[in-house]
Length: 131
Image (cartoon, rainbow, N blue to C red; front, side, top):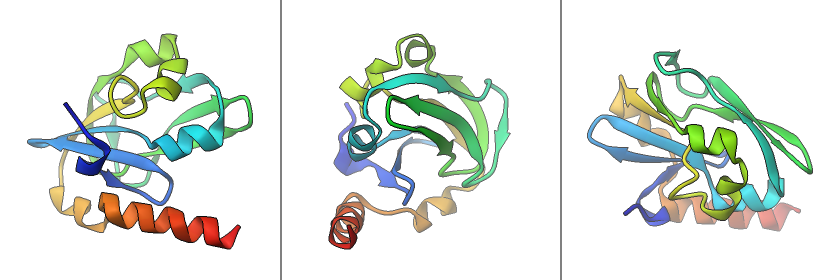
């Protein structure tokens, strides 16, 4: 079972959970709250090669449309088809059932530039202070 504390995060609010050389990717609970009800998700196909911070999909919510970025480089090895068919799963369970894709990483060193859970919480606090 995965916990938000075990993930790495981007400034764009994606999370990464690593098992071996495979990274599951989703968006944080904070992001789902900011987006509102998610109504459509477009994701890359299995076999797609991605580079760190390349756009890899689109999230359409009631409030806005946002791009999804890849926190790591590698090859897409699995796509969560359940959320494509029922995007509301991401709002209900952003860290468990609402993962987007899994990527076999080509450079685990890229994880070093991502936020830890504590650093991400600090980043969110700074965002609140600025608004």
